[in-house]
Image 1 (cartoon, rainbow, N blue to C red):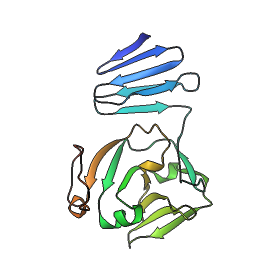
Image 2 (cartoon, rainbow, N blue to C red):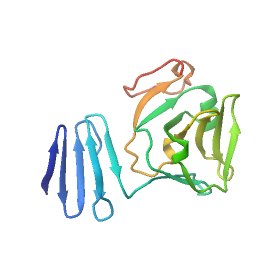
Image 3 (cartoon, helix red, strand yellow):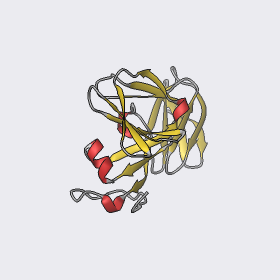
Length: 182
């Protein structure tokens, strides 16, 4: 193993064709250089951002009737504890965010939209029931369920919302900001 690059809090090193990125407080990311070329790599003590020319972020429902790809998503996850999110997801709703016009469905046979309020809708698979998306009616972006993205996601919890409506059977165990409403 030898060092290729050292910057602030990160060390980039290589052994054979694998690159290992380690940063204080971050999980490790392994990338096979035979398939991927980096255009930029940024590492901080809180997050690792990957920007690669040749790879899309992929996601899907449990049965595969809905699958998609997207170039980039927000690197944080918002966790919603409201009653509606608990009912539609079965626990809480954990989502990242992206530009809707960058979302490309590779299969959408199972995609169904449900108007959950006067101002928002939710996308789910009508075959397996996976909760996949949430979207404000007039919004240019889309919320994407963090759990439907292929690993590694390199996402981190950014905040908890509607904490005042949180169910009584669990505690919030991370240090992310907790907001009573939205």
